[in-house]
Image (cartoon, rainbow over all chains, first blue to last red; front, side, top):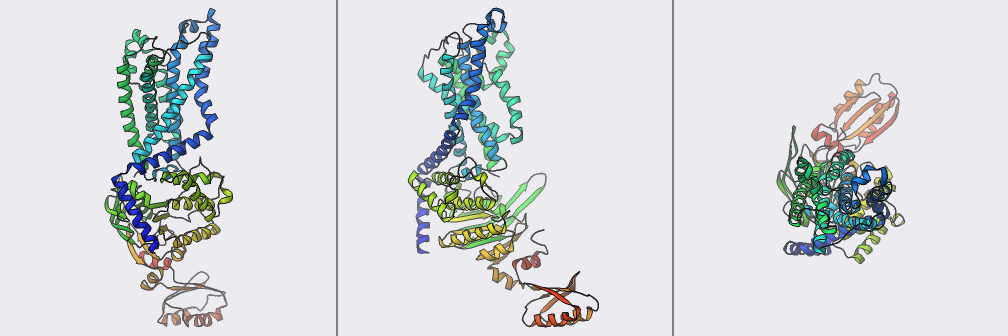
Length: 287
Length: 313
C-alpha cells in the first residue's frame, strides 16, 4: 500500500511537471507514434514502392518512350512534343505526392475508424488529439517526399528524349516538396475522417481522379490561357499549386506561376484542409 | 479517493433526446476492484468513455488521482489503462510490437519498452505467441493481450469495459484470474459487466446502475443482505394434481415470501433456507419429486427486485 501510494505521488508530481513543461512527454509520445508508423512502412516497403512508382513509371513509358517512337502517324505524340517529358516530370511528382498522401492517411484512417477501432490505442496515448492527427499528416508527408524523389530517376532513364531538369533553387524545391506533402497529408486527413469507409473507393473516382486530371499535371497552367474559364476555374484545385510549384523548382525552363503565389496558395490550402481534417478527426474520436 | 465521479450527466441531443447519464456519483478507493453492473444501455460504457477521455460529459466532473479528465485529458491518460469492449489491437503489428509500441507512446525508452513487453508476455503466458498478428488470435487470447497492453505503462486505474463479452467460459475464467492478479499490483480496477457472476466474483464493491442513475452501491454481500435477496427453490414433480394444500401450507411459513406452480412443478422463494429444505422435500415427496434446484441469493435477484427488470433483457 505504501509502495503504491508513493508511486501515485510520484506519478502525480510527474504530471504536475508535465503540465509545466509538457513538451518532453508530448515529444516522446509523438516519436512513439512515428516509430510505429515507420515499423509498419518498413515491413511493407516493397508494396509501398510499387504503389507509388507504378503509375509514374507507366506514364513515362507510354508517353515519353512508346509514343515518340511511333511519332510519324501519331497525333498524341506530336501534341506532346519533344519536351513532354520535361513537362511531365513535375506533374508526375505532384501526383506521386498526392496519391501517397491519400494512401498513407485516408486509407489507414478509414479502416482504423471502421469496425476495428484500432485508432483507440493511439488516441489514448498521452498526447493532445490534434497532435495524433498531426503525426499522421507528418508521417504521410515523409512518404510523399520519398515518392516524389522516386520519380526523378525514372524521368531520367525512361524517356526517349532526355528530360531537361534544372534545379534553380534548392530552397524553393525543399519548401515546395514539404508544403505539397503536408497538403496531401491534410487532404488525406479530410478524406479519411469524413468519408464513410465503404465509400472510400467512390471518393477516388469522383474526387481524386478529377483533381489530378485538372491539376495541371500533364500541362503547365500557362498553356490553359486559350481556355480562359478553365484556367480560372482550376485555381481552386490545390493540386495545381503542387504541380506548378514543382515546375518552378525542377524545370524552371517551362512556363510556371510566380513562386510567391505558389507558396502562398500551398500554405493557404494546407491550413484550410488541415483545419477541416482535424475537425473531422476530432469528431470521429471524441463524442 | 483515486477516482471521483461527481454529478456526471450525458445527454445526446439529436432527433431523439437520449439521457445516457442522469447524475452519476461514484468514488473508487485505491486498489479496489469496482464493478459497474447494469443492463445494456444503462450508461456503463458512457461512464467509462467519459472517464477515459473519449467522450465529453454534458455536465459533472471526473477526476483521476486529482486530475480533471476534461481539463487535462492528455495527462489523465497517463494514469489510466483501458480495455475496450471490442478488440482494438493494432492489426499491423505483432503481439510483441503491440506492447512495445504502446510503451513507446507512453515515453518509455527502447530498452525499457522491450523489457516491459517481454515481462508482460511472460506474465500473461503469451511468450509463445510473441510474433503472431492479432488477427490470428482467439477472442480469449486477444483479450489477454489487450489487458497486458492496458497495464503496460503501469496505470493507476484500469478500466475494463465488458471484459468477458464474447468469451467462452474457459477464457472468461482465465480473464478473471488475470484481473484478480492485478490486485497484487495495487491497480484500481473499474469494470462494467452485465454478468452478475462476474460482478459478484471479482468486485470488492458494486454499483447497480440503470437509466443512467446509481440504484444501489456496496459490497456484493451487503447488497444481497440489504435488499433482501431471496433463495429460489425450483422443484420438478411427476404429477401436479392436488398441489394447492401444499402451496397453502408453505405460504404459512414466515420465511417463505412466494410459492407458485410452474409448468414442471413448484417454485418457492424464501429469505433463508435453514430448516426449509427438509420440509419442502417432505411436502413434495408424494407428488414424485424428481429434481430440485436451489439458486442462492445473487446480484441478479437483487437487480430484479430493484428494477423489476431482468439484467439480460
